Structure formats: structure tokens, C-alpha cells
Image (tube, rainbow, N blue to C red):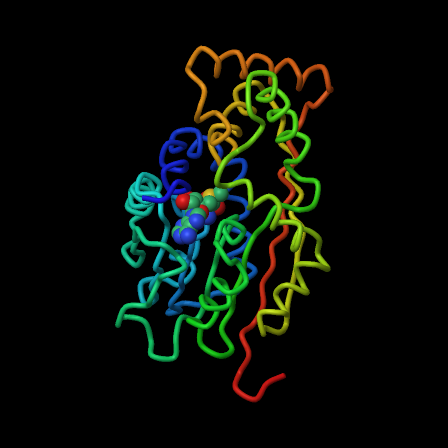
Length: 277
Ligand SMILES: C[S@@+](CC[C@H](N)C(=O)[O-])C[C@H]1O[C@@H](n2cnc3c(N)ncnc32)[C@H](O)[C@@H]1O
């Protein structure tokens, strides 16, 4: 399993506690904006526990199908439970690297009708090439869509956490660090429009989701442990991690950070028909 997959597997519990406030609103919004229809075949990459894949399965109904792909086994297992609780039988959670995904024979020959990727595209190595290949698995005239953090979102919070880490050792979040740099290419509505258009898609649409979450101590620490920031703690022992947690919560108070800005951009586009410009 990749480092990133292990990081998210270890994050399972806290990741789940972030779902209602963070992952689910974005996943549901992405699915609405994709305009999926009954009978559609959908590929959801970097699906986690299904925040967009499960609403997609509900949108396409029994005559449709969803392939939900992720590297993190534990999150996939949670996704299977979530789907089963909802009685959804048209969704398959598969442990695979999205950059190597090939559609099985159950997918129509022309390709998927839709591709979704919520808070995942910036983790893909060689992001543009990887996402262009995935978009190529969608039929001409199909829909593609992603969610990403809006510029400034999560920054203040993440910086404060890393400042607390720096008091005890190296200020680095490990393999996921590159994702935060690459995000800059698509973190405003203009940039995201341009990025989607650069993939060879048209009818780009970008909407902004405002999501400001009270930074209670419990939620703030879950937000660290429930995602890639937890990578910064991998080399510390339990005693030091507890000291970092206390320093972090103190710094949030000192800096008067009372909320976490989870502002998000939802970007969708239509893949080009042959001969379309
Ligand atoms: C921030 S989580 C988002 C999960 C889900 N889309 C959601 O919004 O709840 C990012 C996910 O991307 C997955 N991921 C990262 N790189 C991947 C890759 N190359 N192939 C498949 N999944 C990947 C991680 O394992 C993690 O579950």
C-alpha cells in the first residue's frame, strides 16, 4: 500500500468524524452539479468512504452503476458499510490506484457518463496527465467534476498546527505535502475554470461552497488526524504528540482562530464531442 493510502487508513476514525461537516456537503454538491441521471455509469476516484460516490449511486439508481476507487482499504470498507446501510447495490468500492484504473467490461463501450473526484485530484502524481487520462474514460459529452479547497481555506489552521509541530521537530507533512503546493493551480474560480478547460473540456462551471466550522478542540484535533496533516506526526512518540496537541490548541486560542474555513470550489465540465471545440 502507498504511504498516502496508509495515512488515510490510519486516519479512518477521525476521517469519519469529519464527514458530516466537511466531506459530505462537498460530495453531495459535486453530485448535484454533475447532473447525473438514472442509468448513468460513474467513476469516482479518491472516493474515501463514499462522500460523493454514495450520493452518485443514489442519483443513478438501480439501472446505473458507480465504481468507487481508492488506495485506502479501511475507508473503502467504511464506504461499503455506508452503502449497505443505505441499501445501495449499484456501487462497487475497489482498492486500486486511480492512476492505473481501467474500466471493467460492465462499463459501456463509449465510457463512463461521469467522473467525480472530491478533494483528491491534488494527490494524484503527475496530476494533469493522470486526470486527463481519467477524463478520457468518460464518453464524449459526459461530465467530469472535482472539489478542491478554495484559496485561503484550511491555511490558517494548517499553519498553526505546523507551527506547533515545529516546536518539537521537523515542520513537514511528508508525502502529502506536494498536494498543498499543486492546489495553488486551481484554488480560485478563474484558475479552476482554466484548469478544467485545459483538460479539453467545455461548459465549465465553478461554484463556491462556503463552509465555516467552529474550531472546538475536539473538531480541530480530528481535522488534523483525519487527513494528510497527520503525516506530520509520524515520527513522534505518543508523549510528544500529546504535547503538540496541547501547543496547537493553545496557539489556536492565542491567535483567536475560532473557526476552520473549509471553503471549497466545486468545478464541473463536459467532455468534448468529436469535432467540438
Ligand atoms: C481527502 S480524501 C477525500 C476522500 C473522499 N473523496 C471524500 O471527499 O470524502 C483523499 C482520498 O484520496 C485517496 N487517494 C490519494 N491518492 C490516490 C490514488 N492515486 N488513487 C486512489 N486514491 C487515492 C486517499 O486514499 C484518500 O482517501
